Amino acid sequence: MAVRDKSNPESQRVGVYVDGFNLYYGLRALYYGLRALGGRRFLWLDLHEVATRVLRPHQRLTGLSYFTAPVRNDPQATARQEVYLAALRCSGARVVLGRFQEQLQRCRACGHTRVTYAEKQSDVALATAMVHDVAAGRVDAVMLLSADSDLCAAVHAIRRIDAERGTKTRVVTVFPPRRRSESLRRVSDAWFPLGDAIVRQSQLPDVLRGPDGVEYRRPVYWN
Image (cartoon, rainbow, N blue to C red; front, top):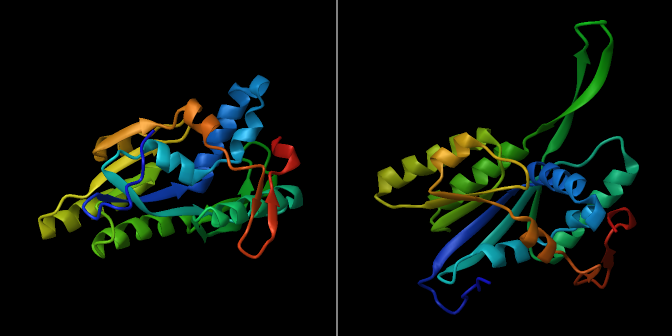
């Protein structure tokens, strides 16, 4: 298992940027593939533990940011999400929230109109954070946990910064379970899938206690 070397200032500084919904749908796909093994439990994922397991000995984690949007019109799912986000914050992750925008979708066949929701701002916030941290010299490498090809634009922006400065920022893409992007693979320095074994081994404790003494428990639905 890789170890974060906080004592060595010369170790490579790595920022981790997590596309929350892209990861969630990958974990759901994993769950449907492993329901007999209690796959829904995998949603209670400890992202710091994931990073610890995949970083190399010469690397150290300097920040972990999780980008998502609040669930709408599903009180039970909203409650689960809020507990999980609180647990992530307790573990040291920075949670950045976008939003869902309501829109109307018309069926071409029957003309029926229904309300749908599109996630907004999360991918832009993630891309901006990656580019900003590179431009500010906060990281030597970025680890992107996503399979969203729209984020290729952020990688290209990082390449332009490197070209202007004569530096090299290593970009590593980690694909969520059962998801992949050929476009991201091509623009990354390295890539690998988030394996089922790491997901199983990187679960948060069933109960976390925050610094204020509040306890956050794994949702019963995720048992």
